[in-house]
Amino acid sequence: MWRVRARGRRVRHHGVPNKTEAAYAQHLKLLQQAGEVEWYAYEAVKLRLAPKTFLTVDFFLMLANGDLEAHEVKGFMEEDARVKLKVAAALYPFTFKLVRLVDRAWNITEVGGE
Image: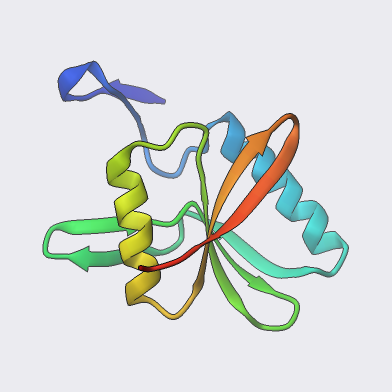
């Protein structure tokens, strides 16, 4: 479900994945069945970055070895989202990864908190 915000930007309701996020959820389900991912949840974690500034992580997951990762799925990334992701990576002790679908393959890169 979409709504329109200032500047004509479309914003979707939280809790409802877009097509790319839904496809990535299917990918995570396969990784879970293969034993690589122990657990994952969609939009289950909201991180405070600064007063009145938050990042709701697209997918929070626990790998089979117990490591926690935050995966942010993007088709197009605006500068504010890039900054939020880098700030979150600097503040929190999880591995943050940027996930993109490129030529029908998942491109997953680790985000550093410089």
